Image (spheres, rainbow, N blue to C red):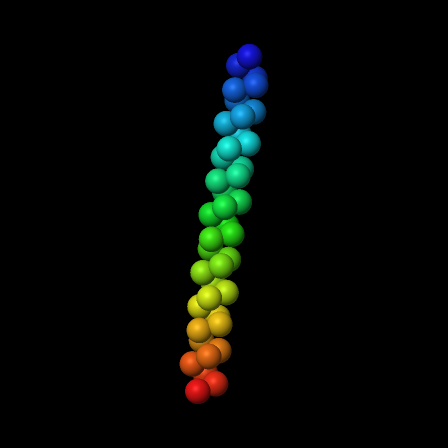
Length: 41
């Protein structure tokens, strides 16, 4: 039973990591889009 709990914790940790990486990528894309808009004007 202990092993199952540990693997569940690892899975949740991996999902949280993936979500934060996605959030960072989205922020970077928004910044790039904003910079390119400013550069065009």
